[in-house]
Length: 145
Image 1 (cartoon, rainbow, N blue to C red):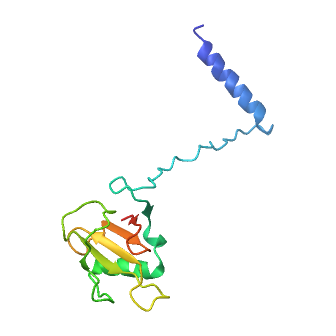
Image 2 (tube, rainbow, N blue to C red):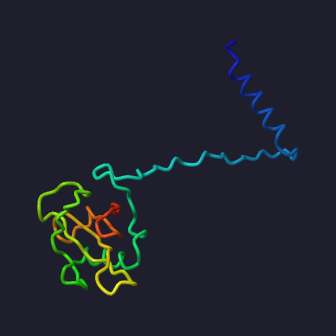
Image 3 (cartoon, helix red, strand yellow):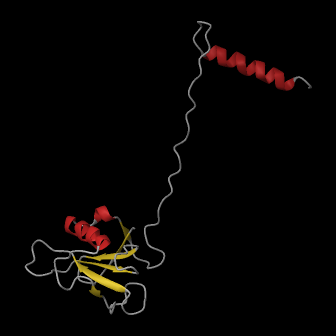
């Protein structure tokens, strides 16, 4: 059995040549690889327990406000950037002054409307810990940084 590996090699070559056209040329078939495993990102933020959303899922007005937060303004409403108290206790508990709120204009509303982006952290232009509410603090989704 000393020559078994060579016999297998010869047998394999014979089988390969039987599968190829009979023009005497050997061609190499491309190896098909299984699709790469894509890392599934979690649907909820482990810190807050809230569902994630991307910036592109924000309404167009929210995307503009999100960019302005990173630049430090200018903001449309005088209350933008004020402390958000988190009285609803839906967002993770933080010390007073950690969260700030920004208005996302609702086109059909004549006032500020119910939509807000809430961001926490320092500096005030940080967007690493932001949340969106479309229903005036009744529910939130975490914005993926």
